[in-house]
Image (cartoon, rainbow, N blue to C red; front, top):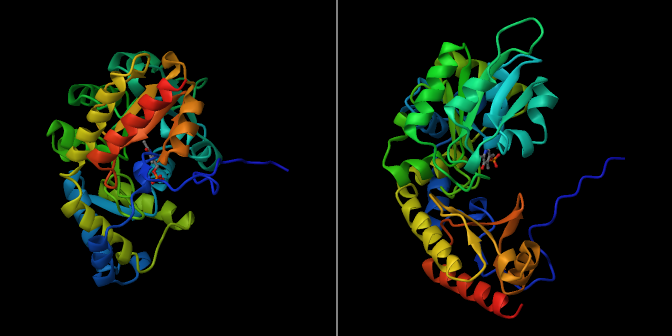
Length: 357
Ligand SMILES: *Cc1c(COP(=O)(O)O)cnc(C)c1O
């Protein structure tokens, strides 16, 4: 019997969480968002008859500059259905070695599609256009067909870093020259657009498929939306149906997403300011190594200050601050439910824990 262990995010014996920096998925729907959900006009999404979901899809298609979009229960389903449409069994996907599709989707792309992912190296969760070009091989009967290149905007494990528009454009150009499709995992795309002032549709220009997640910093309880050409979205719909992702009165959830687009996008700048404040405060503690945040994710290592990462995580949890290790570093995530005062409190706790070590 295979045993799969996922650490519980909540330790029942630990003191209550006062500062939740674990993930931007931890945001709770606000009272105003819940009101919008309660008021939503609904129908049957599976037959295209839910007006609120349809309105959301039109809005996302426009936001991302694509012909059509489809509402999904999760970002993972956006990634999985996209590769299932772009690729055939045995095909090769090119993505950064830290990509969510490789390590955090239960092997879905291999299990459901029979695809292999070539892992491209590079600092901060990004590969260069040159690295991508070098990984391409001629089309021969010996080698797998390289059918899609995927990037994360922002790069999660890379530190929430923002792909430069010039690099995105160059990757699109190389992909087109070589007959590959392009896919953008935009779980935090709107963090990138708020941080740079570059419109989402400009970031996704030339990308065959792109999606945004509503359940992260945007604060909705559920959902992502995947956009592309009308034909692409038609094919995605068939996979959504096959995977059991077709919904019914999904307008209740779509209303939260529309509310988030109206009220929670510009405020992502506050999360970025809080992330910078946290990084600045941590960097002032001798021995703590901090990656300069570009958006809402702060990665740091306290080992140089005499406290191992997992010990720091446990000590902070005892003081009511929740965060976690991610790929060898501590990740702190700022979001809707994190205030500037909570950031100051967290820095104070880290300072005391280091002093006591
Ligand atoms: C969270 C995340 C996903 C998956 O989104 P879910 O809504 O949690 O399924 C995919 N890619 C990246 C980069 C993410 O951070």
